[in-house]
Length: 257
Image 1 (cartoon, rainbow, N blue to C red):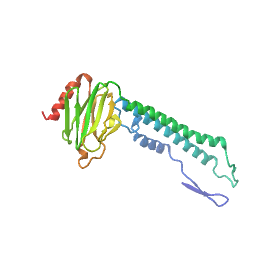
Image 2: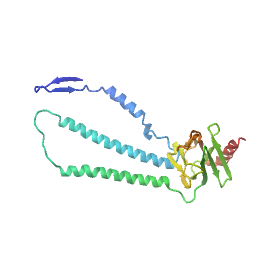
Image 3: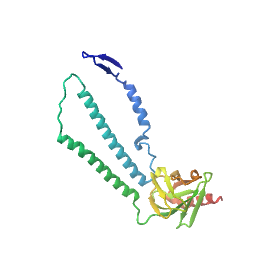
């Protein structure tokens, strides 16, 4: 930072230009926290999560564009109209075309984002007429029950030593009917990019179509008293031709056999 005094006795301060290496290092640090093209979101594990990721990207790109535009205009004004003399700039009291532009533009941006959000919400919350699998998911203090009515299998579990497994086939649409036996809970598996509450007296349901095989941690995301931390489970996504065997294995593990 360097300083000088002009002919009028005013003190000017000139900031040293940052080095190119410093700017590159700053960019690397900032971008490293963005999680690649997912921008800090988990890697989606279902078709519905892919739609949510697209919405997230759309909002971030829009925010980045608006932020860059505002900062660019501020920078332009600071450079273009910085003081060079004692001449008083123009004092026009209105600029109708400009005022219309900066009033209408934000309204259009908000309307587009709102329409995009509604479109994605309908895709994420849509329930197909005939799901490939139905699972009744029941939360209770402090554990989970996964009932497969067509397979006549029920899996119960509590605690962290042997959490219950929710087994789903990849590429098939599974309907999860969410209920609670006592207080409110919340079903949350981060890679599904969805969190849905289990509310007493209300039957919630979500359709999930897994897109990749794997094991994912799930938990209750609604504080439900003392042992809330114990309400964890495992989502296990398997190939469709291995689903029956994987479900039988999960039942045996839950039963301690």
